[in-house]
Image (tube, rainbow, N blue to C red):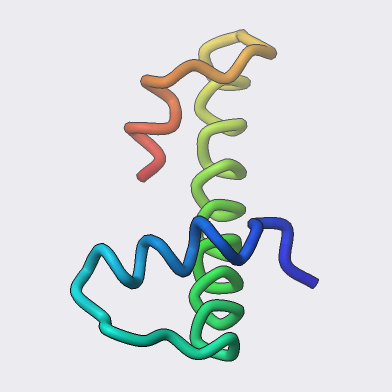
Length: 65
């Protein structure tokens, strides 16, 4: 089940130049984005913990990506 709403994901694909986007493509990209976001979030959490913080900062996300 996708966390990201389909409409913004579809707009991302359309902004890349797609004339038409199927629902299946939208759901597939949403899942890929969520999977990658989870990996980045987990890395960012480790970085914050290593720095002795509980709060995730933008720099943690940037370093994790």
